[in-house]
Length: 131
Image (tube, rainbow, N blue to C red; front, side, top):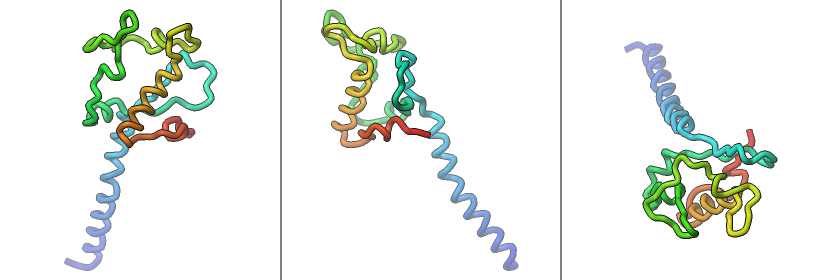
């Protein structure tokens, strides 16, 4: 093979090798969504980025009911999901007695799990990424 052909082949392989991980990262980013609850009207930070599919693949023992929990008469109802119910319906922005504030519900759920698992973001700017 002639030298120019070898150089072109090498450059092609390098370009392919560099673009392959980027495609995977873009795919991963596309699977992420934001936790932008419309109940938050006075926003101090942008909504947090959340990868639902990524969290479902974790081996931390967390099941759907850890986040989509259901309480009746102040007691956790195991194996009953609140999926489809907006968080703000149980966790108001301005809570009454014996209610968890919406902001606290989000922060407690995420941060406590990240601390327990010793992985995941903990600082404000790591979840609420400014563009």
